[in-house]
Image 1 (spheres, rainbow, N blue to C red):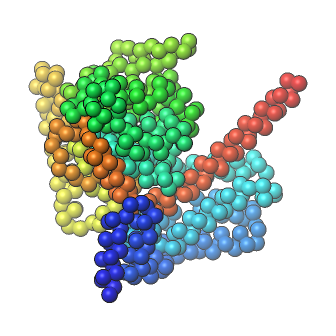
Image 2 (tube, one colour):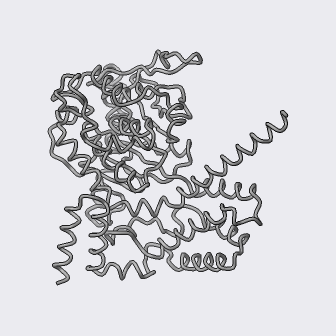
Length: 490
């Protein structure tokens, strides 16, 4: 009887058409397999459950006694990422839906306490002290970002992942994209909230017949591989002509686009509203999509002080960002304080070998990891020894260094949504897809994301709350400053 129920729920999960249907079946699956008992129990070797239980009781006691100063002090020492091991990935692998009730209760208590302290109900703590606390809390806890890999025609998988996160209110405002990932990031970051759902539908990613593809192709164009001028036209159709700064002011989202230098002796760049506010997004995305050897390098464009379009670094050309920095983890940390990474990995060169770091360790995986590390070290050593002979063949030297750059990168984060292997021919990866394939990839992205939704929700709830509170406080501070300035002028 139990087996039949379990199989029935697994079938319901596989056939679910929405996250609500999937989650309902997942909860029933946990109940039928007895995992609910595990969730209700505190005990686990993967985190310090006793410490978390003590902290939760302390917060509840301070809350009930309305000890606001004590609550502020407790939060000062209790807000930082992965508190007592709560972020351990294994805690989100046993159940189909959610994790330990203790973890969810503690995160909920932290969020409720933050919102309470930020409210007008707390009058015995000055505004300045609150603001200082929330700034420090955000700095200590860190922020989450959504990173989309290079992808080619698999970019529609990213669309599905973004759709699943968006519909649950979990899509971070900080996002990065390389190659195809930059297209999806730009779509989301250059349109207002009410416009976003429009781009999650396959039919709205199909261009009209004016581009001579019979209306059968998505972003990448007609039945064959697109020309560079066709890709430029697609971007013109899909993206408003905005700079990074203009896009941020419109949407409040931080778009980051990875590009790699076409010349030697140059370094890769991460374009965004902080480092390159006046650069146009269309050219940045076009450069990030310029696969070396297939599409020509791209010169960026920027808006000057007169509002005119001019070349940006006119002596430099740029290519596919995934070549050197598919997932710009370190730069996001430096620019935004990001320490939690939600990765949508669809890179066709990587996904056949990519694994989630959170997978259970066993002798076979240990051997595989050791073998991979040894091969990387061997390849690096060989290229280093061949530097002088390769220098006589600049093109070959460039290709060798580019290949090494691809091999040496890390392609996963804290939460990994990895595209399942699809047996497509290499020519299809950079070619146009019919609407059926586009719809399949979007749905695949959604379905691959659903099992990760509650993990994302639990691990981003506190940072989202801090971001929202700080945004409101900073706006209030700016408003008060404006009033003071007006009084002084009067």
